[in-house]
Length: 158
Image (cartoon, rainbow, N blue to C red; front, side):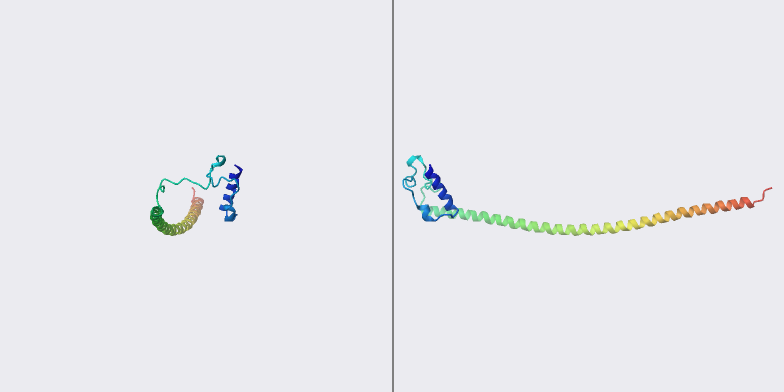
């Protein structure tokens, strides 16, 4: 079991490029590496079971199978590339549309601001006219009352 742990550590170091190939190939005496794990029931990490797809196939057949898989992957990548290109174009068109909509919103906001300022100005003018008309009306009432007092005071009473 200790030997398996050491081998595992060596494999990890090799995977992380921390050891040389010479150290990886070095076999300890009494190792189960070459016996397929027959010693002490430890499985051999270097042996693996061949998958069903390649079992019984020759080198050229496996190579053809790999080429077919690569072609299928290339076709899938081409399809993915065209989809991504189309999405990129759609993204650009959406961005352009958003820019146009933002310009329209900005123009509308400017028009609303101008209209608001005009409305405030006209409201001030109406309030001013209202105050003037109210004060002018009072002056007219005062003048009429003054004339009435003068008329009553001057009117001969017998």
